Length: 284
Image 1: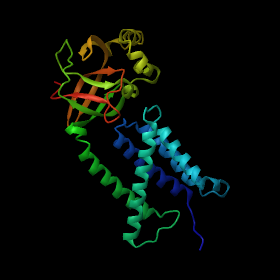
Image 2 (image 1 turned 90 degrees about the vertical axis):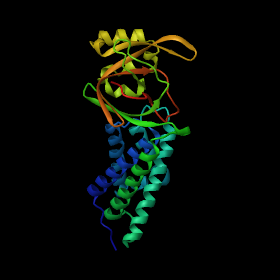
Image 3 (image 1 turned 90 degrees about the horizontal axis):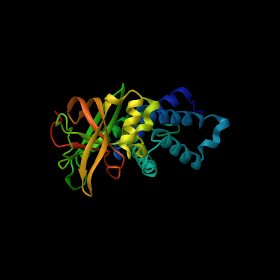
Image 4 (image 1 turned 180 degrees about the vertical axis):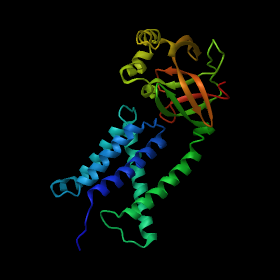
């Protein structure tokens, strides 16, 4: 029996599934959801899946090539992350879970599982697994270790958006001295996609360690009104300054507010479980 493989369908289905895998891995690790990067990784995965069935590219079916393709997908989707190895392991772990879901769907539907996998069991199994991932991890993600409360944060500025995972920090007393409003704190690197591409070097750790110089660069670029220098005090630090960015909109959990000030930390705030600290209570 000859199996007919339609490369366009194979590319499309695998791109959709790979996007779901990468998004699930991002959600598990707390990485910001950079959709264009996730899409680039998924498109690469879809192209790889289609080329595997072209006779002249049969070598792509070898185990090492499969592994290399998966690593390349993660590299495209999460380039610049400090936890690359962790992302690779999470991606393959999620992929194995999805594969189990596809196998289960094929068994319960009574259809034999053949290669390439039919569209029905692939989409059904993938949809079930993705739904379970969202249900389980949205519930689990509300709390970290030791009962720490976590919330999703979405920020919008300059026509760009980023999504973060934030710890609700009752000890975060940082406020804007001009308005007395509480301030959100976030890792500077996690907000780089909010700025125009030519200005993203403003939010590198090296720049943020010298907030006065970074403020000067922002002013030279015509963005001085968007940035502020905030004084702060912390354990082991009598006093210091943080560069802060005023974003157009912030969605923190279920509340949405305009013109929120976000202090930019030059240092990681956790081991990857969250990349921001949200004040306990309303920002208004």
